[in-house]
Every structure is written in C-alpha cells, then in structure tokens.
Length: 325
Ligand SMILES: [Zn+2]
Ligand SMILES: [Zn+2]
Image (cartoon, rainbow, N blue to C red; front, side):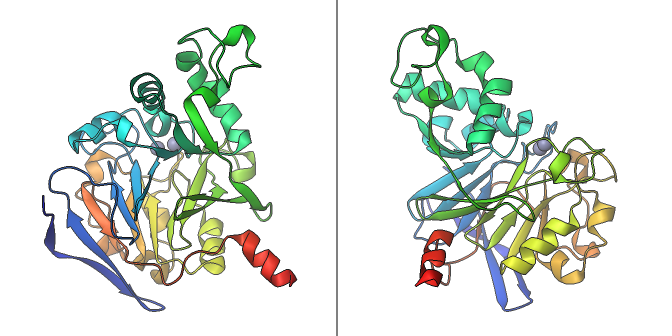
C-alpha cells in the first residue's frame, strides 16, 4: 500500500548545512526495509507508564537492515498495531533494564526460540549481557526446558542461557575516557554506544549510575535514550561528531531520572533546533515545544527519513590502521 506524505511534514534546520527530515505517516503495515536512506520509526513515544502513546521504543531502518532499539512491556502490542509481531524483529538493542525498555524481550526471545526456531541478534556488551540475564531475563527464560543445547554447556542442569535465545553482536570498545564508547554494526547501520546518567537520581555522574546507554546512529542521529539532564554528554558528542538531530527524553518537571523540560530549555539555541523530544508522559502530548525553541515533539506512527548518508561510516578500526600507514 502506498504511504502518503503528510502536508507540512518536513522538519529542517540550517545550522551547519541544510538538514531535512521527511515525515511520512504509516499507512498499513510497518515496513522494515527501504531503498537505503536512514529512517527511524517510533513504535511509541511515551514514558514508562503511558497508556496512550506506547513506550519509547524505536526501529531504525536502512536498506535491507533494521534494528529495534528497546523492546519494552508494551512493545509486542505496539508492533501488533502496525501489523507486525516480535517474530519480524531480527536485530535488537537494549539500552537498560527498565521494563519499558526490556519488558517485551522475554516474548521476543521465546517466540523466536519456539515458533520460528531462530535467534534474534542482539547488540550487547559482555558486561550488560550478564546483568540483563542474571537480574532480569533469567527468571522467565532459563527454565523453559532442561536439556543440553549448543550454548548451555556451562549451565547447571543444562538450563537455557542467554546464548540459547540471542546471537550476540559484541560492540568494540573505542575509548574509555571521558566516558566509555563502543562501536557495533548491524548490517549497514553503524552504532556508537555510550553510557548515560539515568538512575538513581542522586548520583553525580554516569560513573555511579546503574547501567544505561544511548546510541549514535551512523554518526548522524544522537539518541541518548533514558538520561537525566547531561549537558556534558550533549557537548561532548556534538563536538566529536557532526550530529544532525538529537532525539531526547523529556519530562514535565525537574528532578527524578529523566531530563526536565526546564533543564532542556537552558541549552543553547543551536542544540535545541536539532532536538526532537520523546519519552514523554501522556499529558505532555499537547505541550508546545516549538515555542521553547525545540524542533518538535516526536510522534509515533511516522517514518522519520533523514536521507542518504554522505559517505558510509568508516569503522574506527579502519581509521586507526589508515593512520598507522
Ligand atoms: Zn524509559
Ligand atoms: Zn529508564
């Protein structure tokens, strides 16, 4: 079915050069491929406990590749509303262990194992893999069966392990300072992964925070995921990369574990012009963010098409070897 382009559905800014996003409202079934431009599609734009807009889980689409960023408790239902199921998702990333980001992961894992008998690929560091399994997924996934598999040799009694359900894509650590930065590729989609400062609300930096991460996609789109207001991160990433757009979480008050709108309003106007706010509560949907200098409020059910990359992202490793020559 042909999708239609919404009237006035073009976001743009002209900071370093003209950057445009073409917005196309979904019409029918969510498609997970395109002709090669970089796209994002919000299955939901809401915060953890929303009842209207689904949770802030996003699909990145580029050519024949797709990546689901977070599979929260409402994610399987959100996929169904776009005529897909978790079985259509073959690549996933988990930013952190709150239920609005991993609550649907059990369904995704079980459906793949027992219905289509495949393993989804998951971009995950060894450190977080252990946490995600031991603290969250193991209770629902380890005891499905008790017999030897190619992956559970070290598991007492032959119970299932993380690797029975997922094929790990292990990101490479690029640098440890000023904060850890990893790189991974999902087909043609390049990810830079970094730690964020999300929970608890009382610690001074990402260092003391529980595991939570954000991503930079193709060196173009910054998606910090769940984070408290962290100006240092925004400045660092914008200095290091030529970032076109930032999708940032927001809440209506200051304090707690997310960035407050009043805090975000203090950012410089150039940063705000490229910032699209997401992960918001149901009662935030009517808030006029443009009046405060932001680009927009993210909406679900829309393809955000950023166009083709000027050049493919070179892996850092290649750059290093080039420099060594
Ligand atoms: Zn969240
Ligand atoms: Zn969270």
